[in-house]
Length: 183
Image 1: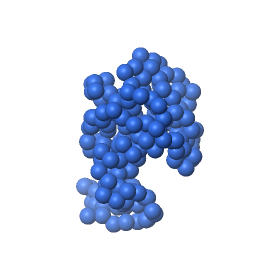
Image 2: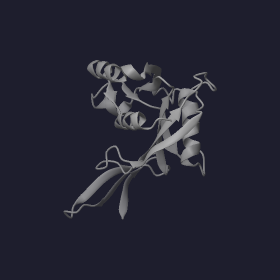
Image 3: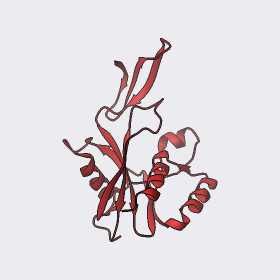
Image 4: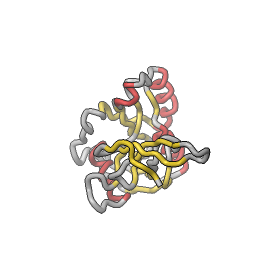
């Protein structure tokens, strides 16, 4: 049981009873049933998204973060399945179509003490990097798309982190599964 403290179109601030008898306050997405995060991979490259995220900037954590194509399930397309959302977000944010998609993990929480949101991690096999649809910038959030050779990913991410970029937990989790999920 929870109470809504603040309600906006895409986010609620809620409270529930904590084990110690106090209140536990957390964020909740009222209009989405899930989140999808997609690792687009060719035989030898991975596509990363560089984003500007206002919460990270507002708190001085970093101007940019490195993530992957991702999005809410069912927020704009009623009755949308996880698989439909994966294909739609890959096309919208990367302009790509996948030859094959494999779900790597369900119900992954990035900050379970702060947000009720969980996500589904997917690996997308990209055979042809030809853009099938002009990708969106998601309201100015996405500033760059970068293909990185798989053999250079760890060094590239370390370099970006040293330059002050924030690395998303979902992206790192997808990389973990990407090494294990050969598709």
